[in-house]
Image (cartoon, rainbow, N blue to C red; front, side, top):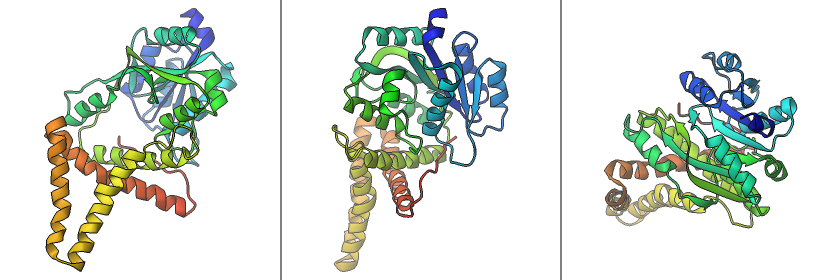
Length: 324
């Protein structure tokens, strides 16, 4: 790993991750690979733990909202200030354990494939059996292998490509990875997802309220990324997700109410009938628990979309939604 130390660094981000952060840093071994840990206002001793384990700690100032995009962007700048520009940088969430051999495999791929700006692998949940929410998130990580449109929060980037594209936009509340990847692809770079274990994630999601907040954050991310990619050669991101949330959770209920008031109260049944149809279709394909969340999720996403639109109309930016 001595060679990797000269050309690779890791940026881990987190907030109050406790034992999960310790597991993350232990899998990286900061005394062999330079690790920048970016802390978003932890109160559980995470920053002291990271220092003790050999990581360089960067604390986010509390004068602006804490977001993953801001943490990654500032972490990259802190890395440049402390060690210069390595060839590659691995971003990882502090609740993830990096699989043995991943750093070497990812760096070897970027060595051999100069047209690729970023590479990611398979993220899986540590305890998919702990709750149905964890199990669904584990399925969510199982995206297709091969050339990809985007990566997630865990990925290795070629630093020269990252810098040329402008890096993570710290103003993004969610959806910052696809937005950055859209800029990279517009510049001629490619993204690869390898069929290889990369990280083990610990969502620790056991309550509906956690899932709901995560879905609200997704709605904010959809709207913000859609707006940010208006001039992208590949088209706007998340157009389909936005359309579905606005149609099913917004326009359809509104139409049912208007028709019920204007013509006959029975028109109000259009709303639950459409929701039931959606539930049955999703249930046959994905299971009934997932179907319930898919229907409810449209309303949470719409709340996020509206929240973003209202803040933008008021000239306000930033904000964050945390589910842990």
